[in-house]
Length: 231
Image (tube, rainbow, N blue to C red; front, side, top):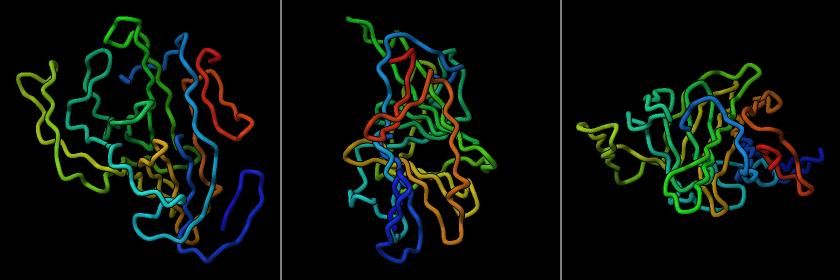
């Protein structure tokens, strides 16, 4: 079954689950609308349904990108005011923008720019994506545990470094709607987001709220673009 944005539906096979994919699609303070930020673009909406095993196969047949990682927050994450963020469960590595998978079915994307000659971010923006319209407020869980851990010797943690932090190649919000889970993982084109719909579930329940941007637009190819300060 293939469902395209224009409304057409083609039946290819009987499915056991429906997999809805949106490819490529903080410091965690109030979203700031900052100048001179390039638009953050999510690639074209391509909604696909495929027969699946657990975890579901990528609709394009890609293996899981093991470079993109999701590291569990064991206390190493702080915001720009230096406050710990217990609402953050996982932080991405190898992605642009950086993603913070949070409690209550919410994900934050951050984008930073550095001035010429500077090694620290001079401008940071944050955009939140939240499942709404009756979505369960659930916390994410990790899948595909990596075979190594990370240690964090950070100034704000010392003299008590955060050690043996587990990482994952796949993260899931389970049952955000009845029979529907929300997945984040990586492929050759970057971060991928997917909704997995069990038999009998209702995909029309899925609704996402974006906040922090100036505007949302679809380009001529159907790609969703998020604009900050009209850029």
